[in-house]
Image 1: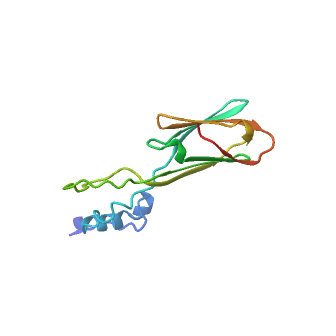
Image 2: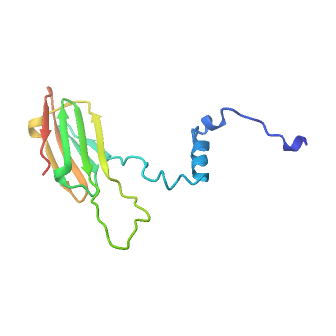
Image 3: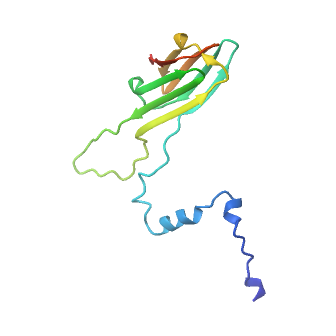
Length: 149
């Protein structure tokens, strides 16, 4: 009988950083997975930021976006990138969507840099799913919307 006893650790899930794992298992076991498929995590814009003495260079992965749907705002040393992807409704006779993993909705990313940006000299290019920003450094900052080319 002593071999069947287990030590109870009330903080075990917290130590593994999975405090809600059992709740997720509960919903999966009861078949709610199908009903909850649209509640996936929002896609995140992934960034690479490099710095020279004169400027910051940013590469942001934004696959499948149209450049018209991308907005870049610069305010001092704060840079904000946002984009909206819209789901196009397409119905084909006799076809049912079995699984859809493509993300539709608003994506947003904002970050601060050490130096203010000279917003009059910012360059933005979008090619092959990657937004490239050249953000020249400046001592003073002001807000300005940037046109993506």
